[in-house]
Length: 542
Image (cartoon, rainbow, N blue to C red):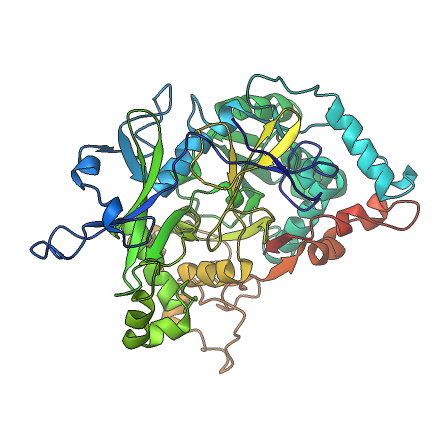
């Protein structure tokens, strides 16, 4: 049973059906118990009967004690181990990121393989120049949505969502193409092929628009283009192949998760991720307000299918690695600086009635860290173009918390908890792009221990007989630019100097479009331009 209440209309949230005109409703899941417990390690306080083994609702209470044996009997699983499961598991426990990943991507009951439908206007583009104003534009979009029909009334509705690629096609895709080809012509043409990798390609619309643009405007570049799509959804793989293969034979679609990628690309390439990382699974950590030690969130599912969240000392290597990186980059903690600075103040605070023993939940992008490591290890000469949401309305409680929503009787319903039935709900996160940029640049500047040496790298006209490392970065000049990375061993720029790749920058959606888009094509009769005015909560990293 859903508990519904009215929310305000917004056009900045993610891709729900009737996104522009929708009425939002709040709900809670009646079979979900969102309780939290913090477990001490087995040795900590073992012989002290006054130290509680677990603390429920993050408040110390003698009435809510429970036995740790209740959870030790639950099998610890991962999303990968559940890929062959035909229904959501029971009697298990898993990290929060595995719960999210299983809910969204499980091939048999996951949200994307079974519930989500990408809005597609069947090849017909919106005639922006003929529309009076943004109100008429919204009416046109609503009419296109109406062709998908009404929701059924005995369960979740059709999870219909759109992206700017579909909404502004082909002009959004042409802007992306202009950005990529400008960089390619400046740095690599005619010595290198134009190699593009895309993840989260959806219906294949962005790839089609990019390749059509190259074929029309830059035929000499199109002849050297190799477009690679890495797609996790088997259904979308077939959609993309059907759309692209006959028209553009230079496309290759690979059915694989980017997190399972093991093929090294030694050539310069461009890596595109449009509105993908918002659905990357996050982990949850909370900090012990007495010791400031982090605890990792674990979701438990009992034999009845009910959920609980418990917190245990950090033992997962990926969580530990992210927290080390977070400390190195000096990103703020969810614990206030005042409490961090004084043991006395923390003890005083904890002695207050009903004081929590753990900090607020902090959602950390551990799967995003995995992506950046994959780029470093298998695409060492890539250039990343990434876009996604920087802020979101109606998030659940916590730092960097997600929106959890579904469709019910033609209405988008945001929820107040992460612990919802697997496969029925979209779970998506905002991204702090400034912190992403810093994390990305740090990872790219630290080569993986198994990285290739110059002798293992592919030969290219931009290779030199003397390596940039042996010559030194400042061999030709004492000036060292702050906006460039250290050069790769043996690889120079097009000028012949080992100056290193330009560092990435963050752009707002409108800044990016003003630079690369054909804005006259999306301008309405009254002068408004929805490709600039919409998606104010989206940013680019390039």
